[in-house]
Length: 184
Image (cartoon, rainbow, N blue to C red; front, side, top):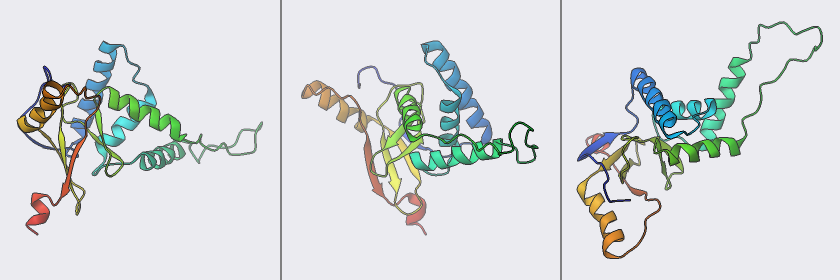
């Protein structure tokens, strides 16, 4: 994982996306999936968009709730019931396994990260560059910063090259107070 990895030497706020950034990220993800032959389905796109638009780390059940609300809004209440059916058609429920499969897909494509300590997901700041990052999670405001730096890379290199440990997935999380919350 550490060999030939791309990285930058600074912090990124992971929830700092404008609507234009979200559109650009979605388009880039579609292009990446097309190039690799991966299926970027409508549900995967919706989930990725919700993760990008979230103002804090978002859990799977929060995603399910938002998707269910979106589906409820899509079924137009002003439609007159058809003569064949007097029952109003309820929106199709969002099944948790399909959301979890979509999240696994987004993780596998490097588009998002999972924060295991809080069981939530955040966008990846460098989605097309395989990298190892540490996450700084503020316990007060839930701000998350992604840090890809030389010390993080050195830790991965030590595990793989010096010890011979093959890293399949890495999540480094530090919880505390961000710079803004410290100055309040």
